[in-house]
Amino acid sequence: MAQPSPPASPAAPPALPSPARAASRYRAYRLPAFVLAATLLAAVGIATVVGLRSFAESAQWVEHSYQVIAEIESTLAATRTVESSARGYRLTDRPALHAEYLASIPAALSHAAQLIALTRDNPQQQRLARDVERRMRLRLAEIDRLMELYARDPQQSLISGRTSTGTEQMRALTAVADAMRENERALLAARDLRSDRNATLLTALVVGGLLLALSLLALLMLSLWQENKRSRALERESRQALAELEASAAERQRLTERHRSLSHYAGLLQSCQTLEEAMDMTAHVIADLIPQLGGRCYILRASQNLAETAARFGREAIPSADLLQPNDCWALRRGQVHRSQAHDGGVRCAHLERADPQRAAAGEDDPRWSLCVPLVAQNTSLGLLCLSGEHAPREADLALVQAIAEQLSLAIVNLQLRETLRVQSLRDPLTGLFNRRYLEENLQRELLRCQRRRLPLSVLMLDVDHFKRFNDTHGHAAGDALLARIGQLLQELVRNEDIACRYGGEEFTLVLPEADAEAAAQRAERIRAAIAATTIVHLRQTFGPATCSIGVATSSGERDTPQQLLQIADAALYRAKAEGRDRVVNGDLAVAGAQ
Image 1 (cartoon, rainbow, N blue to C red):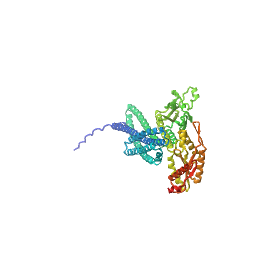
Image 2 (tube, rainbow, N blue to C red; image 1 turned 30 degrees about the vertical axis):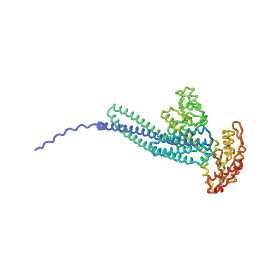
Image 3 (cartoon, helix red, strand yellow; image 1 turned 45 degrees about the vertical axis):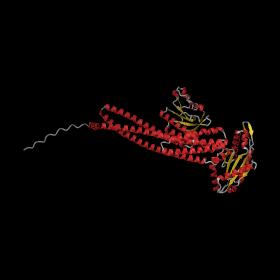
Image 4 (cartoon, helix red, strand yellow; image 1 turned 135 degrees about the vertical axis):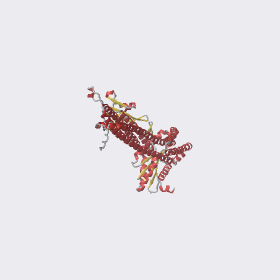
């Protein structure tokens, strides 16, 4: 018997063409791919926004640290102002100095309070700030005690001032302030490290997300292009949008990098020790960030009548003068940014090269442009940033130049203030000689050096004879002129290695390294004779000559101390006065040691 044939199987569907099968296969992945690409772009955007906010917050904390550091310096400067005005009043008895002393105390306390307020976010720094305030109040109390003692007994006040613990108090205050400053700098370094790490992570996230999103979008556009012309048109539009997105991301990344570079530049400026360092760094930063621009930095002299070139960068499209007067620059005249370009009718500054006469005769516009940015801080003109280029600049570049100018202005003010404070802390303003603080710091060093080399060292203590009578007769202004002239004479008569100081009032001290007793006595005699032969002219009147008494102390042993030398020289000085003044008397170390 024949077996039945098997049922016929259903006909298989016709095979799709290869492109159709690919389109059908890709169509199932379009929506997930689109969702994933959109998610990635959103994540990139969110990460960018979060990163920018993080950078802004980091910049705020950096600015906060700079404010704390500046307030530390202001607190120390205010304390020194109180100290110097009180000392000046006790030495000169001038009412203006007493008024300055009373006015400077609230300012010092205000700076200390502001420092405490600024550090409320950091318990460790706030403890140090309160310690600064406490030590400053101790110093102010000591100064007030000396002022009250001066009101009762001026002579006793001077003696008490020499033995006061003010120097130790000020050193302790400075030490605490230095600790605070180092803590803030450590915080700055940590924040810079965290910012760099966040920037690297953000860059990796943005680049990775964009690359993956670009890959998905490319696949989607390829699929759409295979379907029809409309899909290809949409693909072209997507590519254009993608290019804009890439440009926006690149611009955003470039701005972020510029912001980081500007923050780094601001931090480096605060570490510059000299104005030349700040200028060279500024020129290097501008040349790196905006290489298409060229120009120079000017610094105004102290007389404010001439600006000198301090640094150059790039190639100047419009050459500028090496020296210029403030009236030659519209930016310095008006205190505002001045930009000039021929096609928009801008007026070019006088210190810049004139327009090309051949091009002007032919009626052609000069495409070159210039930008002058004044360096101004605390309502004071400090200099000028002059730039020029062959083509119109971007607004982002101009904003970057102005930000650099603001940072540079603050750095110049800080450097000038630092130099002023350094000079004031070492020099006597009336005579130009070193002050007593410099003497105390360097006499010990020179004495130890001479003792190591087994060389002698001599100290001269000089006092103007009858100076109080001279002041009472001719006035304090004439007395100041006499002291200034004596200081000038001492600077002319000492060697480069000698130390000439104003010890206080009409007393002067000279440290003569490697000079034995005989050489010191000869030097003292020459100084005495020079002062005795000197007259001064004040208010068209001639005064003098004045005489002086000099005490000499010479060290040749290894156990001598600066205090012994000063005491012996001072005792010899009093003996010179007791013996009739206008003479030189040698002190005796053996007698001082026995005492």
